[in-house]
Image 1 (spheres, rainbow, N blue to C red):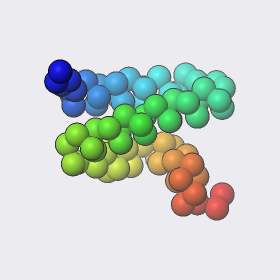
Image 2: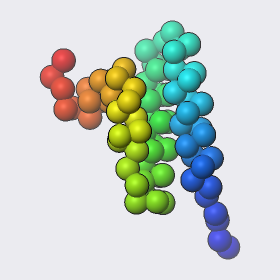
Image 3: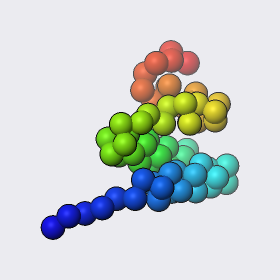
Image 4: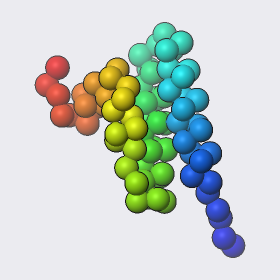
Length: 75
């Protein structure tokens, strides 16, 4: 059985999550949203060998939170 994952659908879902993020009021929900985004980004990178770091770096708020999440920032 072969499963085909559409890379464009992954990007669309990441965009949807990014757009929805501004309406989130709970830190827990925000964390789960970021986790979803980065899990999808990881899947996308494994499928295409293309990193989405630059794609997501355009979003300063997301970049700052993820630096903290990954331990790159001491703030």
